[in-house]
Amino acid sequence: MDVFSPTSSSGVLVLLLMGVLICIAPAPAPATPQLPTDSSSSTSPQLGVVWTPPSPPDSALAALDRLAATGATAVRLTHLPPDTLATRADSLGLQLYVDLPISHVPAASLADTLSQVAPTLNRLLALATRHSSVAHVGLARIADTTVPVACRTLREWTNRVHEQAPSVQTYYVTPFPPAVDRCGDAVDRPLLDLRGHPRPDERWRAWAAHTEAVGIGALGTWTRPSASSGLQVPRSPERQARYLEEAFAQLLDSTRTAPPVLFVARWQDAAAPRLPSRRYGLHDGPGRSRPAAAVVRGVYSGTQRTFAFADGSPPARSHAPLLLGWGLVALLGGLYAGNLFVRQTVVRYFTAPGFYRDALRDGHDLSPAANGLLLVLVAAALGIAGARAAQLAAAHPGTEHVLRSLPNALQSTLAQGVGHPALAGLSVGGLALGLLLLWMGALIGAARLSARFSLAQGLVLVTWPCWPALLIVPVALAAGPNAPLSPWAFALLLLGGGGVALLLQTVRVLSDFWRVVDAPPWTVLLLFVLSPSALTSAAVLAAAYDGVPVRFLWRLAVHA
Image (cartoon, rainbow, N blue to C red; front, side, top):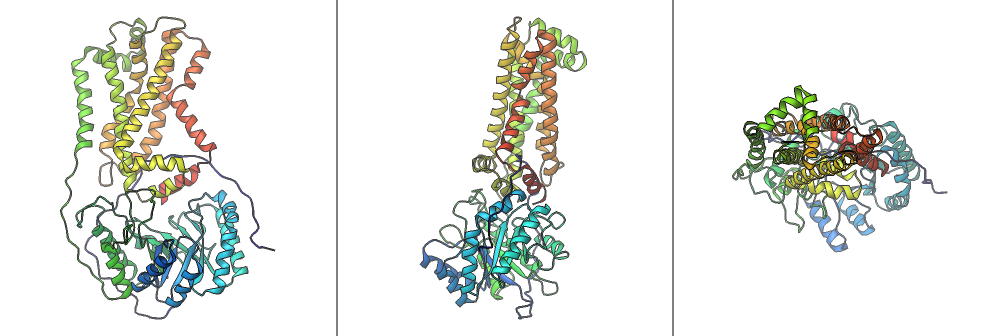
């Protein structure tokens, strides 16, 4: 009887998160990395790379030979290797760590997903009986290992692997810190995904204090395809190489304990990265090497420990977002100073709501042009916030994990926004303007069932309660990794403060509508269903019903 019989489980909830945490700051000049001098296999770390073999067998074998020539002693494969590749790995003395095709799954779905890939695991274990190089199997890559149910599943499948192939060890790859991840003892060796982490040595040593067997499953940072050369250029190939040089200096220090296994991510750029602006490869798509490849070759082979790279010229900073934001603030100030209606309405709205409603009911001298401009400025303010959130998300290492945990349709849409902040801003601003105009049309139509109600009255009714959106402009401009407002605080303000402001706007609009129009209760209830807050909530609930794992996404956004 096959020991890998299917089991059952279920899925989870919702979330959509774009603005979050941490940019990578350039570090000082690196110390000299010193590999451990003990040559025994029990103390020397296994050094390798993450690799997706090309489909043509000859190309895969030639690439494996080049990979072994760097001094690597291990390879982490993203899928099951063919028999010919395992044979070549045997002859080269390489250790193969093979990932099962399980990636970015919530804890509740892990058991079912493992059951579905049991045939692949059976083939891998059969391969391990014929090849000494195949001795490690990855049960999951970026699963929700922050809850005990995932640990039980991993422990159960580790036992099954040991029963069928005692020489094969299990691992999983996690982005979580040890204070959050609970499954370190459920497998033989947890591996850390430290891509883009600002201090990978600190994260690994924090784990090692709790779990002695922990290794590093993915180390490195990304380059941007459009980046120029030079250390002064953010996300340049030289910055990627310097990141690895500094990480090796800290992790492979002969005076301190080194990770038992360390993989650099990755040998070559992925064919279809989720975020096209992130390229992790030591080589680009066509196979041309980047400076980071020389760092890996020098350190792995023990022939070179320090490296020199050209400084290059720092790119000119774009002040367009800053000018746009403060231009919007200046336009608001000019509108207040030069328009009597705006000045009077500000006083009435905030200090004398009864007079504000009387003017709204009267419907005269409502300055539709000023109110229309205010509505456009509200949408522009939300668009600026959306663009800034996309910029911060583009710099946060955990963004890629969040995107890959979403349904495919949402992945593609949000990846476009993260990669193109201006597009994200236009989308957010345009969507906000569309929802407000839709609601305004419904309010005007409902009001005309019992009284005369003009477009100018509808503009005032909808626009003025949106005033909190204007406050987000200076907040967005003040947010950033080295700015007065941290990206994390900005994200909390967007999620928490934005939700509260949306609810308050809905209550104020419907309250004013009730008093001005004297509409029946069923009308107000129907209008609430058509409000932006109700439609937004419905979209979130629909995503939850569609299986978006909100708890998992939240943990990835906060902790990865």
